[in-house]
Amino acid sequence: MSAATITAVIPVWNGREWLERLLDTLAAQTTPATEWIAVDNGSTDGAPEIARERGACVISMGRNSGFAAAVNRGIQASRGDWIAVLNTDVELASDYFEKLIAAAAQENAWFATGKILSTGTQDQIDGVFDALCRGGTAWRVGQARIDGPLFSVPRTIWSAPWTAAVFRAELFRRVGALEESFESYLEDVDFGLRCALSGCSGCYVPGAVAWHRGSAALGTWHPDTVRRLSRNQLLLIARHYPPQLLRRRVWHILVAQMLWACVALRHGAGWAWLRGKWQGIGRFRAIRSQRKYAEAAVLEGHLREQEHEICKFQQATRWDLYWRMYFLLTRSEAK
Image (cartoon, rainbow, N blue to C red; front, side, top):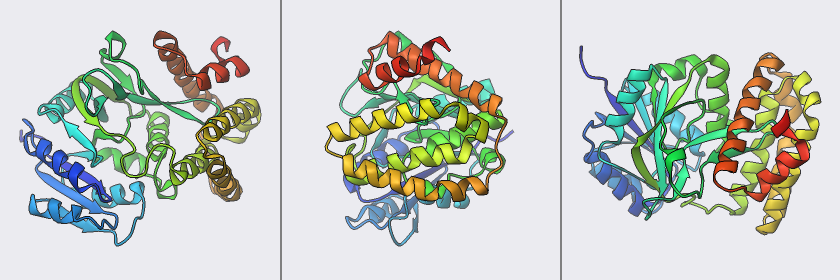
């Protein structure tokens, strides 16, 4: 039996210096990708030229079409059995692919991701997997925590950060591509929710390590970042919450969204939050008129498990004020 092939898909929007470092670590993989595809979102700093010089196939989108559209275009052009989606500001340990593919094959998982650390550190977590609460907001589990035993246990997951993850090519034929209306942010959470509802689980492989600069293109609290996150929180609810669940969990949704507004205001991004919510409300009814939903009990059961994971990791590390207030106001820990 021939070895599985890997296609590396890299959405690019400037960041030439970071891309060069990523390509260096790609070239050093003990299980190398047989194909590199860089999808350029209108870079102006020579980043796509660097990718081409290093042997990547470069696809030009002609403009900044967003992370989701760029990744989808790369997936469409891929020929590998596995597709590795990589942010430009990531650096991979040399055995990253080797450990992910081996673990996914052993667990019969549909996708896999490793322990993502913050660039320049050996012990600060950037994120390990994503979890979504019933209020429609997500947490990248482990973010800004110090590494420890809690983050060193392999586990089954439903939603991987698309920072540095590998996926069976067949998965996209089963659950579809990224939702391009999200542009950037939470499109991976939307995909993970579809994986969960389809029974397609992945695995977290702590022995596979990568380093991520994080929000390198715009910054965590850039107005465009906040606007898209604010909008996409509502798009997640519109796309997935059946009417019964929407009515039953209206308090959770209001609490989660208003607490997030407070966080945005604290960072001087209140206007961007409001613009995003207005855009999300404007699309809400049209999205719901076209959707067929999973059973409310199935989705709520999944979200309840996700809330339990958020609570467990928060308690074991330290409480963020946002999540402490969410669980206090919704009393979700007891339900």
